[in-house]
Length: 538
Image: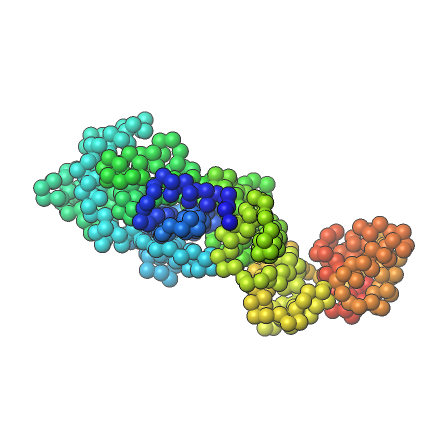
């Protein structure tokens, strides 16, 4: 089945430009200077989609990730103690963990993200820049950079308003005295001895061999060097790198003229902006405006994050509002229903339209582990309600028997629920509860005394409706749909606008003018409690 999804069209374009390669390497990477957020995840998930697009075209591919662990700490970020001032300028891999739980600063921020990859359905070869330098993988690239320093300087100066001086070298040395690399300057290179002399602002001066992790290439040289080292074919990059005169433009010249390698195809992606109030703010680890990938997995399915990113072209920016998680999950659930319906039609020999094929492909790319059949779907918003109602504070867990009882009352087919559906439902319940408590609506049924005060504020017609509704509620089966229908029929019976009936209910239950879907909500509660509350009795 041909797909017009951007991941597949990108893969076709790459293959057409780079025909007959033995292997197509898709690269991505992150500097772990702070919490790795879903904006960072866009690069990795985009790379994974391109990789899957290449495999879909029948070629051999590899997805690699390079953690830029040898980058220096640039400043004391808002989430760091002031004592970290002493580490500014040192490689992230050489700085102690801020919380003492990992072997380094870099690993502290990388580890939670890498641990989330399995949930996200991403398999890739992982490289750490500090280890690559220390193992000598960059040694040859370092020599080529030093021997071609004038050529590199000339390339970079074409894009600089402030030209690099003639004594500039494409290298920084890690000072043996203070451990910093951002404070050193190479002052000479001996081509025969293959040594560099450097001076550090701490006063230390020495001559060293620039190998095995003693030095680091600056970013604009490091990037093209790694393209040739890892034979990268295509790489997604943030729009800052892909702009005119950016590090990609200088990189393609350096990789061709210095490293004799054809640069990879670029895929530029836009930022994911986090909505804070009415403003949408670009996420940034250094500024502290983040929503970490590990935090996402506490409130929503990983497939929904993939869907959020993959349903749009990389060039389209995404405004992300935490309050919109239920709507986003409902969109994904609808896509899932569409997928199983369309696959059935396809198996029956039907010809699908282009937009229908696109739905199938978006679901496939969003869902690395596709279930065998349409799973049980309980709306996320409803899960946010029943997870709070069924939560046992004494056991600190959701009472799944109570959940299944509530779902039965709302006509969900849970009598013979299988293990897959049960676990998925359970996961969604805990996620939705976490979301509700932190970003959504905390469900607080008000005490009786407050309910009586709210009742006294209602109109006489609303009070009349409460009495009629309560009396008839005693005689019907306690099911969400039946309760919903009864709200409308009793309101109509006494000439009350149904909206006023809902309003009256929310006032005496929650002390608010709004709340969850009322029929489902009432059926989730204990029947006797509901009747007592509408009687304004304990």
